[in-house]
Amino acid sequence: MKKVGVLYHPLNQRALTLARKLMQFLETREVSCWLCSAWEGDSARGQIAGTDLIVTTGGDGTILRAAQVVAPRAVPIVGINLGKLGFMTELEAGEAVEKLPALLAGGGWVDERAMLEAEFTSGNGETSRLFSLNDVVVARGEIARIIYVEASVDGQPLTTYKADGVIVATATGSTGYSLAAGGPILNPQADEFLLVPILPHLSLGYSLVLPPEAVVELKIITSHKATLSIDGHMSLPLANGSVITVKHSPVKTRFLRIGDRGYFYSRLERKLKG
Image 1: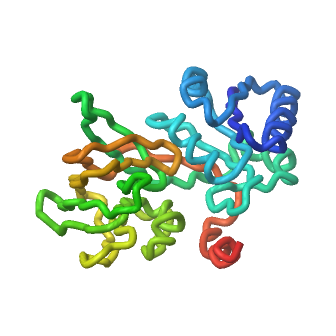
Image 2: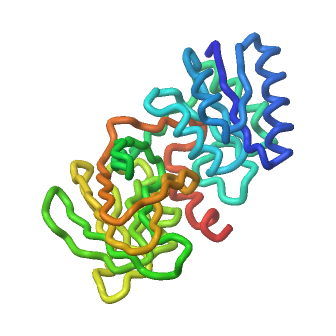
Protein backbone atom coordinates (compact mmCIF):
# COMPACT_ATOMS: atom_id res chain seq x y z
CA MET A 1 0.00 0.00 0.00
CA LYS A 2 1.32 3.38 -1.03
CA LYS A 3 -1.18 5.88 0.40
CA VAL A 4 -3.03 5.74 3.74
CA GLY A 5 -5.52 8.16 5.26
CA VAL A 6 -5.84 8.47 9.05
CA LEU A 7 -9.16 9.70 10.44
CA TYR A 8 -9.41 10.52 14.15
CA HIS A 9 -12.11 11.41 16.68
CA PRO A 10 -11.58 15.16 17.24
CA LEU A 11 -13.05 15.18 20.77
CA ASN A 12 -10.72 12.45 22.03
CA GLN A 13 -7.18 13.66 22.66
CA ARG A 14 -5.90 10.08 22.78
CA ALA A 15 -7.29 9.54 19.28
CA LEU A 16 -5.37 12.50 17.88
CA THR A 17 -2.18 11.50 19.72
CA LEU A 18 -2.40 7.95 18.36
CA ALA A 19 -3.21 9.24 14.87
CA ARG A 20 -0.07 11.37 14.85
CA LYS A 21 1.99 8.44 16.13
CA LEU A 22 0.67 6.26 13.31
CA MET A 23 1.46 8.98 10.79
CA GLN A 24 5.08 9.03 11.96
CA PHE A 25 5.21 5.23 11.82
CA LEU A 26 3.82 5.14 8.29
CA GLU A 27 6.24 7.79 7.08
CA THR A 28 9.19 5.75 8.35
CA ARG A 29 7.95 2.95 6.10
CA GLU A 30 7.82 5.37 3.15
CA VAL A 31 4.03 5.28 2.98
CA SER A 32 2.36 8.49 1.80
CA CYS A 33 -0.30 9.49 4.31
CA TRP A 34 -2.75 12.21 5.24
CA LEU A 35 -4.48 13.11 8.50
CA CYS A 36 -7.98 14.50 9.02
CA SER A 37 -10.71 14.74 11.63
CA ALA A 38 -13.46 12.20 10.92
CA TRP A 39 -15.93 15.06 11.55
CA GLU A 40 -14.58 16.99 8.53
CA GLY A 41 -16.12 14.78 5.85
CA ASP A 42 -15.75 17.17 2.94
CA SER A 43 -12.07 17.74 3.70
CA ALA A 44 -11.44 14.00 3.98
CA ARG A 45 -13.29 13.26 0.74
CA GLY A 46 -11.07 15.80 -0.98
CA GLN A 47 -8.03 13.68 -0.10
CA ILE A 48 -9.45 10.21 -0.72
CA ALA A 49 -8.37 9.86 -4.37
CA GLY A 50 -5.61 7.26 -4.69
CA THR A 51 -5.89 6.21 -1.05
CA ASP A 52 -5.34 2.47 -0.50
CA LEU A 53 -6.44 2.25 3.14
CA ILE A 54 -8.24 4.29 5.80
CA VAL A 55 -7.15 3.89 9.43
CA THR A 56 -9.47 5.26 12.11
CA THR A 57 -8.63 6.09 15.72
CA GLY A 58 -11.68 6.35 17.93
CA GLY A 59 -14.63 3.98 18.13
CA ASP A 60 -17.56 2.75 16.09
CA GLY A 61 -18.86 6.30 15.59
CA THR A 62 -15.57 7.26 13.93
CA ILE A 63 -15.87 4.26 11.63
CA LEU A 64 -19.41 5.24 10.64
CA ARG A 65 -18.13 8.64 9.56
CA ALA A 66 -15.24 7.00 7.71
CA ALA A 67 -17.72 4.81 5.82
CA GLN A 68 -19.47 8.00 4.67
CA VAL A 69 -16.14 9.42 3.51
CA VAL A 70 -15.14 6.43 1.38
CA ALA A 71 -18.61 5.74 -0.14
CA PRO A 72 -19.00 4.96 -2.98
CA ARG A 73 -15.33 4.02 -3.30
CA ALA A 74 -14.04 0.60 -2.27
CA VAL A 75 -11.30 1.82 0.07
CA PRO A 76 -10.94 -0.62 3.01
CA ILE A 77 -11.04 0.57 6.62
CA VAL A 78 -9.06 -0.58 9.66
CA GLY A 79 -10.49 0.64 12.93
CA ILE A 80 -8.36 1.11 16.06
CA ASN A 81 -10.52 1.09 19.16
CA LEU A 82 -10.40 3.91 21.69
CA GLY A 83 -14.14 3.83 22.37
CA LYS A 84 -16.34 1.84 24.73
CA LEU A 85 -17.85 -0.77 22.40
CA GLY A 86 -15.72 -1.33 19.32
CA PHE A 87 -17.98 -3.76 17.47
CA MET A 88 -16.56 -2.67 14.11
CA THR A 89 -12.97 -1.89 15.10
CA GLU A 90 -10.21 -4.42 14.48
CA LEU A 91 -7.25 -3.43 16.65
CA GLU A 92 -6.72 -2.13 20.15
CA ALA A 93 -4.53 0.96 20.56
CA GLY A 94 -1.62 -0.97 22.12
CA GLU A 95 -1.28 -3.41 19.22
CA ALA A 96 -1.76 -1.07 16.26
CA VAL A 97 1.92 -0.42 15.47
CA GLU A 98 2.73 -4.12 15.85
CA LYS A 99 -0.01 -5.43 13.55
CA LEU A 100 -0.36 -2.70 10.93
CA PRO A 101 2.75 -3.80 8.94
CA ALA A 102 1.13 -7.15 8.11
CA LEU A 103 -1.92 -5.38 6.74
CA LEU A 104 0.18 -2.90 4.78
CA ALA A 105 2.02 -5.85 3.24
CA GLY A 106 -1.21 -7.31 1.90
CA GLY A 107 -2.11 -9.62 4.77
CA GLY A 108 -5.52 -10.02 6.37
CA TRP A 109 -8.90 -10.52 4.77
CA VAL A 110 -11.73 -8.27 3.59
CA ASP A 111 -14.93 -8.17 5.66
CA GLU A 112 -17.56 -6.77 3.28
CA ARG A 113 -20.67 -5.13 4.73
CA ALA A 114 -23.96 -4.17 3.08
CA MET A 115 -25.07 -0.55 3.10
CA LEU A 116 -28.44 1.12 2.66
CA GLU A 117 -29.31 3.91 0.27
CA ALA A 118 -31.90 6.46 1.36
CA GLU A 119 -33.51 8.90 -1.04
CA PHE A 120 -35.83 11.73 -0.11
CA THR A 121 -37.03 15.06 -1.43
CA SER A 122 -36.64 18.13 0.77
CA GLY A 123 -39.11 20.98 1.09
CA ASN A 124 -37.36 22.96 -1.65
CA GLY A 125 -37.75 20.08 -4.10
CA GLU A 126 -34.13 18.97 -3.96
CA THR A 127 -33.64 15.19 -4.01
CA SER A 128 -30.87 13.76 -1.83
CA ARG A 129 -29.29 10.30 -1.86
CA LEU A 130 -27.50 9.21 1.29
CA PHE A 131 -25.57 6.06 2.21
CA SER A 132 -25.84 4.30 5.56
CA LEU A 133 -23.71 1.56 7.11
CA ASN A 134 -25.75 1.27 10.32
CA ASP A 135 -29.26 2.65 10.04
CA VAL A 136 -31.72 5.10 8.58
CA VAL A 137 -34.04 6.45 11.27
CA VAL A 138 -37.23 8.45 10.86
CA ALA A 139 -38.23 9.87 14.24
CA ARG A 140 -40.16 12.56 16.06
CA GLY A 141 -38.49 15.86 16.86
CA GLU A 142 -38.02 17.44 20.27
CA ILE A 143 -41.77 17.44 21.06
CA ALA A 144 -42.66 14.19 22.83
CA ARG A 145 -45.56 13.20 20.58
CA ILE A 146 -45.80 10.21 18.29
CA ILE A 147 -45.63 10.53 14.54
CA TYR A 148 -47.47 8.51 11.92
CA VAL A 149 -45.35 6.66 9.39
CA GLU A 150 -47.09 5.02 6.45
CA ALA A 151 -44.84 2.10 5.50
CA SER A 152 -44.88 0.06 2.33
CA VAL A 153 -42.58 -2.69 1.08
CA ASP A 154 -42.08 -3.29 -2.65
CA GLY A 155 -44.99 -0.98 -3.37
CA GLN A 156 -47.42 -2.90 -1.15
CA PRO A 157 -48.89 -1.14 1.92
CA LEU A 158 -47.62 -2.68 5.17
CA THR A 159 -48.96 -0.57 8.03
CA THR A 160 -49.17 2.90 9.49
CA TYR A 161 -46.85 3.02 12.47
CA LYS A 162 -47.96 5.23 15.34
CA ALA A 163 -44.65 5.50 17.15
CA ASP A 164 -41.67 7.59 18.14
CA GLY A 165 -40.21 6.54 14.82
CA VAL A 166 -39.04 3.73 12.56
CA ILE A 167 -35.58 2.26 12.08
CA VAL A 168 -34.34 0.67 8.87
CA ALA A 169 -31.12 -1.08 9.87
CA THR A 170 -28.43 -3.07 8.10
CA ALA A 171 -27.05 -6.29 9.53
CA THR A 172 -24.13 -4.22 10.82
CA GLY A 173 -26.58 -1.86 12.53
CA SER A 174 -28.55 -4.71 14.08
CA THR A 175 -26.41 -4.51 17.23
CA GLY A 176 -27.00 -0.76 17.62
CA TYR A 177 -30.14 1.36 17.97
CA SER A 178 -32.20 -1.36 16.32
CA LEU A 179 -31.26 -3.83 19.06
CA ALA A 180 -32.20 -1.30 21.75
CA ALA A 181 -35.61 -0.95 20.06
CA GLY A 182 -36.19 -4.71 20.24
CA GLY A 183 -34.85 -5.82 16.86
CA PRO A 184 -32.98 -9.10 16.28
CA ILE A 185 -29.23 -9.53 15.80
CA LEU A 186 -28.08 -10.49 12.30
CA ASN A 187 -24.68 -11.73 11.25
CA PRO A 188 -22.97 -8.49 10.14
CA GLN A 189 -22.05 -9.96 6.76
CA ALA A 190 -25.70 -10.71 5.93
CA ASP A 191 -27.41 -8.81 3.12
CA GLU A 192 -30.83 -8.83 4.79
CA PHE A 193 -31.97 -5.67 6.57
CA LEU A 194 -34.45 -4.76 9.29
CA LEU A 195 -37.58 -2.65 9.69
CA VAL A 196 -38.07 -1.87 13.39
CA PRO A 197 -40.65 0.47 15.00
CA ILE A 198 -39.58 2.66 17.94
CA LEU A 199 -42.03 2.48 20.86
CA PRO A 200 -45.12 1.73 18.73
CA HIS A 201 -48.51 2.67 20.19
CA LEU A 202 -51.54 0.61 19.14
CA SER A 203 -49.87 -0.35 15.87
CA LEU A 204 -47.69 -3.13 14.45
CA GLY A 205 -44.98 -3.70 17.03
CA TYR A 206 -42.95 -6.45 15.40
CA SER A 207 -39.62 -6.20 13.66
CA LEU A 208 -39.35 -7.44 10.08
CA VAL A 209 -36.33 -9.05 8.43
CA LEU A 210 -36.37 -8.02 4.77
CA PRO A 211 -34.54 -9.57 1.80
CA PRO A 212 -31.85 -7.49 0.10
CA GLU A 213 -34.11 -6.88 -2.92
CA ALA A 214 -36.80 -5.17 -0.83
CA VAL A 215 -37.59 -1.47 -1.23
CA VAL A 216 -39.07 0.32 1.79
CA GLU A 217 -41.06 3.53 1.47
CA LEU A 218 -41.83 5.64 4.55
CA LYS A 219 -44.25 8.57 4.40
CA ILE A 220 -44.32 10.95 7.36
CA ILE A 221 -47.64 12.24 8.70
CA THR A 222 -47.16 14.73 11.52
CA SER A 223 -48.16 18.21 12.61
CA HIS A 224 -44.86 18.56 14.50
CA LYS A 225 -41.23 18.38 13.55
CA ALA A 226 -39.73 15.08 12.49
CA THR A 227 -36.14 14.14 11.63
CA LEU A 228 -34.23 11.84 9.34
CA SER A 229 -31.06 10.45 10.92
CA ILE A 230 -28.32 8.65 9.00
CA ASP A 231 -25.94 6.54 11.09
CA GLY A 232 -26.70 8.63 14.16
CA HIS A 233 -24.67 11.67 13.13
CA MET A 234 -26.38 13.14 10.10
CA SER A 235 -29.72 14.71 11.00
CA LEU A 236 -32.12 16.37 8.57
CA PRO A 237 -35.56 17.94 9.21
CA LEU A 238 -38.62 16.29 7.71
CA ALA A 239 -41.86 18.07 6.89
CA ASN A 240 -45.32 16.55 6.92
CA GLY A 241 -45.78 14.41 3.82
CA SER A 242 -42.07 13.72 3.32
CA VAL A 243 -41.34 10.38 1.66
CA ILE A 244 -38.14 8.44 2.25
CA THR A 245 -37.25 5.47 0.07
CA VAL A 246 -34.73 3.02 1.52
CA LYS A 247 -33.16 0.11 -0.31
CA HIS A 248 -30.08 -2.08 -0.40
CA SER A 249 -27.17 -0.12 -1.87
CA PRO A 250 -24.75 -1.40 -4.51
CA VAL A 251 -22.10 0.36 -2.42
CA LYS A 252 -20.32 -1.78 0.17
CA THR A 253 -18.19 -0.91 3.18
CA ARG A 254 -15.02 -2.98 3.34
CA PHE A 255 -13.10 -3.65 6.53
CA LEU A 256 -9.58 -5.02 6.42
CA ARG A 257 -9.18 -7.57 9.21
CA ILE A 258 -6.37 -9.68 10.54
CA GLY A 259 -8.24 -11.71 13.17
CA ASP A 260 -10.23 -14.91 12.92
CA ARG A 261 -13.15 -14.93 10.45
CA GLY A 262 -15.50 -16.12 13.18
CA TYR A 263 -14.68 -13.16 15.39
CA PHE A 264 -18.27 -11.86 15.58
CA TYR A 265 -19.64 -14.74 17.61
CA SER A 266 -16.68 -14.94 19.94
CA ARG A 267 -16.92 -11.25 20.86
CA LEU A 268 -20.70 -10.83 20.81
CA GLU A 269 -21.50 -11.44 24.48
CA ARG A 270 -18.37 -9.67 25.69
CA LYS A 271 -19.15 -6.53 23.68
CA LEU A 272 -22.82 -6.41 24.60
CA LYS A 273 -21.99 -6.71 28.28
CA GLY A 274 -19.60 -3.79 27.93
